[in-house]
Length: 357
Image (cartoon, rainbow, N blue to C red; front, top):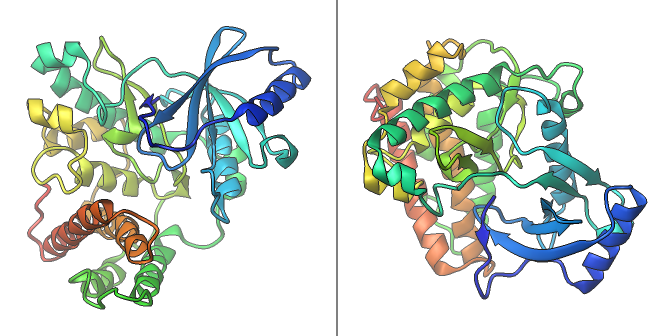
């Protein structure tokens, strides 16, 4: 699900944790011996390790070494969505077992089957290098799977309990305005650090769709959060479900298109695929989404602009953490630059000059 952890990257299971985990899997009747514990690193800030349980390859996911106040709830939400998707046509990791007993590891965690595939944010399978048709087709299949996620049944599922009351759409802009206001309270953070953010929020509030049909939202859908199959142009699994919710699946569509690694590519995602070229265009992705039964796209520009706002504000948080001494300057500056770019792209969409067409 990610690449082996490089030296200097923290986040694994020490001997005490392995012993506690071994006791838990035995009590649960899952197996008896844990071996080959290998830390993994990818896009996640959580601890993700590959291990073998009686020889079976599994992946354990838990909050970071210094959990945030909501880390356990985030894990519980991820567990709920994987349970909800079980047996569906949406590609996802198969949940094996979950534990919310804090006496085991001190945090909520879960075990899932290892996904047979590769993360295009970290590597590229040889078949994709050899065959440009693979690179084009995988994008079309990816867009179709995003459509299927929005169609997946969530009512009466474990994820339904995570649906917040009220309108998902109505709370979006106020939520991100609040985040920006919090950033502006950080010492050293300039009020105009994100040019155009207030105007973009104003436009989004004025032009918001009246209604929506609730569905499962991944919340951070891009190729770096996707595992692809090595020999066929298919999605093996969407991963990193920490921002999932029940909301408006059209936000996933907007997010997917904004993050697709063709020009403009504000995050520089899936660098290996982007460098090779030959990817489907955003227009082709949109047609594949529609053909797979995706949601009506009459308000697509609004969702593109919202994706620019939300993604930009989220990654701007790394710049704020740098100013607070909690993140590296390199990461802070790199993501701040991307956040500024996203504000400009969102403003262009709002002005009727959609750069994602």
